[in-house]
Amino acid sequence: MTNPIPVARLTAFCQSALRAIGADDATVRDCTASILHGSLHGVDSHGVRLLPHYIKALEGGRLNKAPVLRFTQTRPGSGMLHGDNAQGAVPTYAAVDHACALAREAGIGAVGITHSSHFGPAGAYSLRAAQRGMMALVTCNSDSFVRLHDGAERFHGTNPLSIACAAPENPWLLDMATSAVPYNRVELYRSTGTTLPDGVASDSAGADTTDPQIAEMLAPLGGAFGFKGAALGGVAELLSAVMTGSGLSPDLASMAGPDFSTPRGLGAFVIVLDPDAFAGADLVRAGITRYLALLRASPARPGSRVMAPGDREWTEAARRRADGITLDPVTAQAFDELSERLGLPLLADPGM
Image (tube, rainbow, N blue to C red; front, side, top):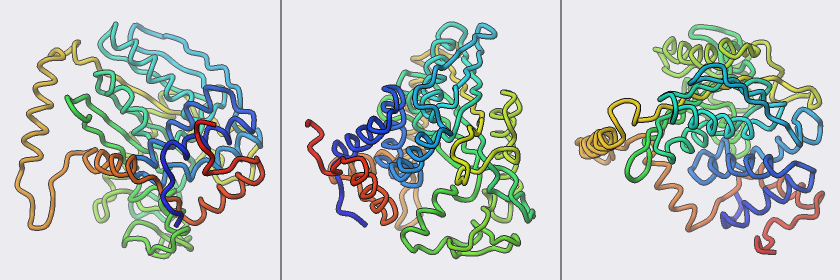
């Protein structure tokens, strides 16, 4: 593992690397914001370790370096956004912006996204809506890597769900894969030599394994009750693929390649609710405040702490803002290679 790198310097490196390979300003801004959200909040599987992958896809032509997004409002509270094969953060942040605007007018804003790509941490997008006083749900599908409950082949993608609700301090924030762990967690464990937990991954025959080197598919969330996780993966599939007319997980090209020139055509979906259209912002704020107070005051088991969704992330973000972000060995090596190839010192002064 590297020594911790200050957040500002890591941000500057990501921006400079994307700019150096010809990405436009929106891609530089949004891709960096999404992966820094992951690394800052302790979601390292979807943090800056994705930068080399995104650069490979941008250089290979899978991702459009200068996309032109096209939004069509279909009803007072709904619309569709064509992502023009952008890096996934670009259309997803844009969809959140459109959904918030629709919700201000109609009470609810729902935006389907087409012609998109891997968007990184789903929580980055629901959080943006919550920071504007809204409640939001964000989801996407991806290429098959998760077996069904009692299944022995890949079917769903990791198909994340994120829900955020504005609160007086930090929002209530859920960000979860519908698989037992994200695929990028397996790759992170391969990099760090860490053994997988029991029951989260399977080998090529569908048998459970804790060895990340031979993990060929993931289990759905829920262990013995994995049918629930498989169904939640289906919720993401219905919204992201079926409702948008995009490809189902089994239809999508692998994120890992080897083809990095052909767009993958992922779908995604954003739903935003304006509290003023329901009980009203003041009453909703009072309700979430009381809910969080009761939750955090609930008795914990010995040696444990009761937390609301997002509490771990806020604590980790405060620590990393102060202490910096550590790169895993594979990511550190990939950053060194980018640094040399693009002539960008990783520890350069971000003010230069």
